[in-house]
Image (cartoon, rainbow, N blue to C red; front, side, top):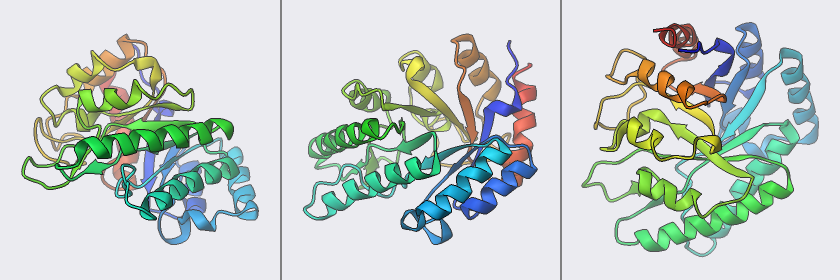
Length: 273
């Protein structure tokens, strides 16, 4: 099996550090790919102006870091209520504008969520919005990555869209913009009956630009455990993806920064098994 160099394994910083500190931390630890949210605190998207963005871009260039952004799944991309729906459009466009300023290479986006009784209307609203923002992203030369989200308990009122193969495919097959590709969260696939194998046999791998990693339990509930704390078969995932020709990056999304840092070497070793 081909090896996976640690250079292809990034770290999802999320909201753990201000953006400037995250870049400095990544540079000190030889991490070349990071993912970050711009929703709260020092990183709030409305704080990214030309001056700050210029300094951040210079720091990324200095440390040779590829930066990605990750929108908040709590913002309902499938929203249709008046005024709120327009705010969701503005939120996503603000992320795209920030990506241009920061030189971010991608933005992870979601299909939204529904309340069981309104699934058809929510799916159409999410599709329409993703189509609009993909067009906006294309004009701004920004890449969006649509993520498969996690299942919720069967008796939950709220459920994420695009958590099954069929729902995710319903969206991405209708979104043929070059600005809309895919982020495959492998641990989310592990939670549903189709499993990772089912997803890998179905999804158009050339459209997958990121594979997100965390441990969890088969057919269990949403958890982002450290490797070895669940029953996810990481070696099998790496073997299958690399054999199919996957060449883009992986993204650790669990535990602390130190946990994710240590796991880069662990995953590289697993790829040799």
